[in-house]
Length: 390
Image: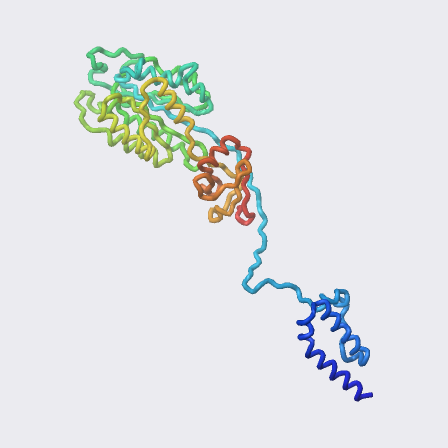
């Protein structure tokens, strides 16, 4: 009996050693059946020789009983998913303030088309039907009319006549007549804007200096409120404030440029409306002022009231970027981790027609993305990984 058991064990050992060849030469299901049959014969001969399968293995099909769980390759990495948080854009602040800085010197009586420069500009702003102040009453329109003293207290016109003005000669330098900006400001502007020029000299640098002191402190470049200065002038800057004798020969053009640069450094753009006509020297100066106020952009040179209206509309509606306030702060280092869509269209980070993060509280849309957002402001969707939201 012992010898027979030994023979069975030897046969089992030999079969076990040969099992790989059998498995390689037969389908996996047949190999499993052969293995199970042999284990059954061996267990019948000696139950202690082959261990019984555990409960879990017994529940598996014969072909899967010896299967191992699938493992990822050694080089693969498994990144845990990060929850995504949708961030609601805050209410848009589309407030825009435009300060009209208007030269009130005596030369503004010269013609622009079929009207004086003064009247054409006044009507472009305040005409009841065509004026931009009524048409664009959501804009915060402000006004600063300026002039200064002239030798002898009166302005001599180019033809030798004496200018009749609606106001007495200036006694301060500059004389600055202002209306603070606010929406729907037509009545206040219309009441203070005279029908004739102020009639004095042209201390443009001092007018800008006074205005800068008034508005720079109140302006914050980190908000969505935009402040713009529009300078409309036809004369070379001068300064009779110190002497009043008419002998002032100091070149004040660099002072005008310096004041415009100061505004630009505070985040306030200056647009220039050149009413210089055929004065090439003055036109060149006003181009330099325009470059200081908006690098790369020329002065506007309208030739009629209609062109003035078109110019003012263009200035009032220009908006090269869309800055959107966000309800939650974001990690600036994770700017491009966002999923941003406008009207269902996904935007690319830092693209010409995409989005960027201006700061932790503002998303900036550019190009066609900005235009689509302005057309459908409720169609903007912003999502960030939650660990990037503060």
